[in-house]
Length: 276
Image 1 (spheres, rainbow, N blue to C red):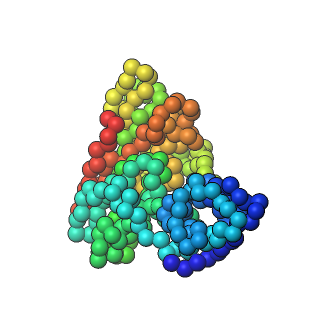
Image 2: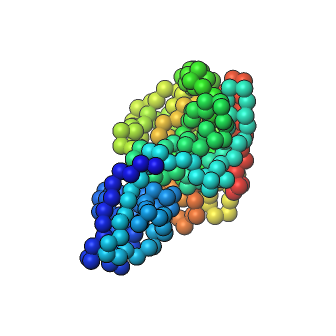
Image 3: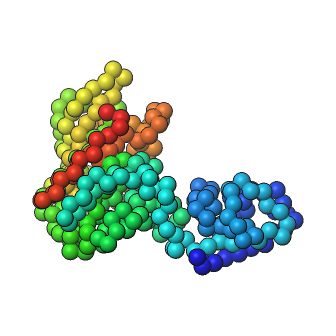
């Protein structure tokens, strides 16, 4: 891998953890990102990879390697499972707490960077995305032609994406949230007081209720926008358990949203959750 920066520790750095010292090379990075760089071998100290907790010492040479040349980590391959493989499309399971797509300028791992290893020789292209905290299926198109075909299916409303969500509250009946969304702010989507095209609606069916006042819902969308199901359910008064943006503090150990099923012409895949 190519070197992109280096620095020598001096007397004032003695005893400083490597993940804190790395701020000198990456002043706008977060602690989690710096630790991921170190854990994935993109930081060398005196020519060797090391732990985030390494204590710095005068004269230590710290080298940052080019993240763009990273390869898919074995640990990611172990967590991503093939749900179905067809002639033109495949589907893989993504657990919560893992990025779907590569994040530009970040060392955070993703399913996208592993697709070539999962489907060798098939020109795999990530066709849809899930939020970092959402589990479930990612659709993979084998080649640009198939990817374009999927986009046409989405635009024509012939794709069904079915999610399960555990939410606060118990609805009296099925309902549809039709509000258009403003996704200009990447961190928080806003609900607008106007109707979206039908392929952007969220159709919600009640499945089961629980003694703690929560319930299990099934949500069907055709062509989702960023955070669509999360913000639509919260807007309807049923925030998802564990949602740190549109929900509230509830002590949940994960966000309970799972992409369970996807159906398009000639292809269907189902992935059950582990929490139902």
